Length: 72
Image (cartoon, rainbow, N blue to C red; front, side, top):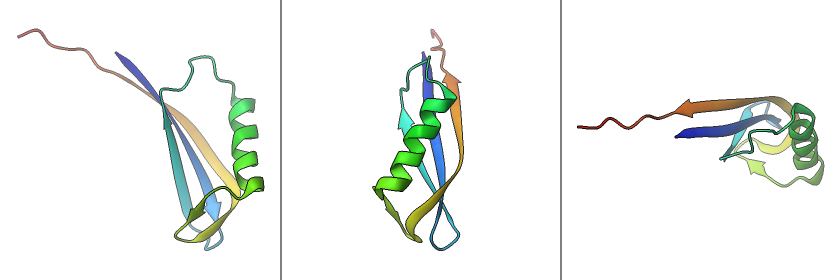
C-alpha cells in the first residue's frame, strides 16, 4: 500500500510555522495547484494558528510511504 501526504507549511503572524497535512492526495496533483490552494488558504484567512493568522506560504512537500505486509 502506498500512502501520499501533502504537508503545507505557512508562516504565521508571530513569525512561527503552521503545518497542515492532507492524506491520500491524487498522484497527478501539480505543484501549481498546490501553490494556488495555499495562496487561497492565506487570502481567505481560513485557519488560525497559535501564532495568529497565517501571513504567507512557506513550503510544501509530498511525502510518500510504501507499506508491505509481511506474511508470518
